[in-house]
Structures are given as structure tokens and as C-alpha cells.
Image: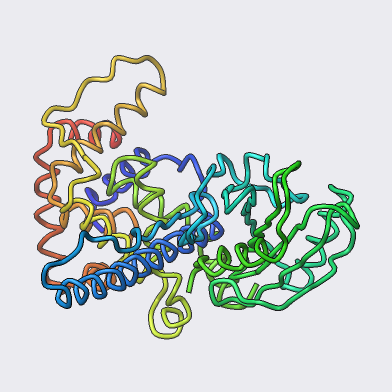
Length: 230
Length: 170
């Protein structure tokens, strides 16, 4: 390196200064999750579009004079801004409100908190979602979730604890009546995936009738639409 | 956290500052620099174990960074504005001097082509050997040498930069 190189390097050093913010592995990981969710959504939308186009095309070929197109509505896919999952909304479900800030992982946020993505399902069924980094495995995170919910609400222990999958990842589905006996049906689905815990909760709006088997089925359809990073 | 994730986190922790500083010299903006580093790391993470086994992670990440930056420039959606003339900085004290250096260096870097800027930053600022610069940029060592020579010649002709370097020497 000659004199000018050295002078120039000193100048570059002086000019560049210090970065105002740190780049963290956690931030990178979140971005990877978001990117994969978007890829998943794009692929899901493409599959959905093909699934719609082919039958409609075949139908058009089969009915020469053709009726007006009345195929299924285009797939509606929601991608969470803060939590990096995607939800292909089933019929009867819509996004009510997107989280305006990120959950810090503490407590068990209810549907009215700004840290949850809130969905409106059939009737007055609601579901909400939040996620936070964790170093726990699924079992211990599920236990922690139960403790957090019981600390925040007068909920009993879950009456059922079922192994399911969410977006292909192992998950647990907890079901309880809250408060015990005559309360609402509350279902909480938990999964831990690549160091992030995702919690999806469903219940009715207070003061509305509950249709438990139908609600369970609706929440299963909602969970089936979730995509996590692959 | 598994070993791969831990290794990646350690790398980010240890190298993020240096990577951001290099990225700033490429982009001229801290927000873009942070974005560029994150983009390069996002590209690297899914194949981190393979990178560690077969390649030098630092080289791989820098290559991803330079390629992403080049692709941003091609698409122009980052909206970099070339400056023909460097404005004077009529401020007082050290802050003014620092700002003047920053503005002058940015202006000088903008006068270079993308490849010249990348070669200059990697070779002179990051002090990478020519062979590694060639690896990062995916070109021959001879190309690095020639590009650097052209970049230095161009900078030598920049009167403001020359003024600053004279001041440094005095």
C-alpha cells in the first residue's frame, strides 16, 4: 500500500464514522422468516390461482355457451407485518386489525391488545395471533403459555391438549372453558418454530352465543391456512 | 440455539460494525447500509453451515453484499442521487470539519463507477488482499488491479479530495 492509499484509507475511516444502529442475528432471522412467508404466500396464491383457473377453464370448454363465471373468490392471503407468518384466510374469516407493535413475549395478550393480529371468523368467533422469540421447546413453551393465561384470566386448566401441526410444524392445541363450567370456549394453538413461538387463540366476543363444534371446526380451518417458514 | 445458529449469531455480533461501515461507503446512507448488510446476511443464513465448511464466511457475506448493492443500483429503486458539485459546509468547529470530510468523500466515491467504488472500498478501506477482492467480486486479480488503478487516478484528479489529503499530510 503506497502513501496515497494510506491517506485515502485514513480519509475513508474519518468519513465513515460509526453505524447508528446494530445489526443483530435476531433481526436477520426475523427478516428470513418474513421473506419465507412471502415466498410461501406467493406459492400458495399461485397454486390457488391455478386451482381456480383450471376448473373454470374446463367448465368454459365443457359449456360452449357458458354461464357467467361464478367461480370461488380469489384466495385472500394475509401476511403478518410483525410476526412473519402468512394466513390464507378460509371462507368466513377476515382480518379485523393488524398488530401495530410487536409483542414482547410477556403475559398472554388478549384480543384487545395492539400487539395481536386480530381476525374475525364466522358469527362472533375471533382469533388472534402473536409471536415472540423463545429458547424454549414446544412442551415448555406450552406450559408457560398455560401459566400466563391462568395468571391473566380466571381460566381453568385446559380440558384437552392435543398434538396438531401448524404450517407443517408440530404444535399443541389447548381447549378450555373460561371461566370454568359455563364460560366461553377458548382454544389456544402454540407452536415453536426456528426459535420463535407462535400463539393463535380463538374465542367468542363476550355476550354472544357460542356454537362449540362449529367454532372448533372454524378455528381448525383457520389454523390450516397458516404458513410458517419452511 | 443450535450450533449453526450460534455460529451465525457470533459472526453477526463480531462483524456487523465492519460490514455496516463498508456498506455505508458503498451506499452513502446508514439506513441503506443497514438494509444492505441485513440483506446479505439474510441471503447467507439459510446456507450458513455450507458456507462455513466450504468458504470463508466473510468473503461470502461481502460478495452477497456487493451483489445486492449492484442489483439495487441496476433497479435504481433506492434512488441514489449523484452529485455533480460538492456543497461547501459552512459550519463551525470539528463537526463542520467532519461533515466536510464526509461530504467530500461521498462526492468522490460517487464520481467512481460501481465496480471502481467496490474495488476501492474492499481493497483500500477493508484492506483485503487483491486475491480476496477478486473472489468477492467474481473477477480476475488483474481486473482488480486495473480497476483500482483507474479509481485512484480518478480520485487523484479530484481537487477537493486532494485538498483534504494535503491537509492530512501537513
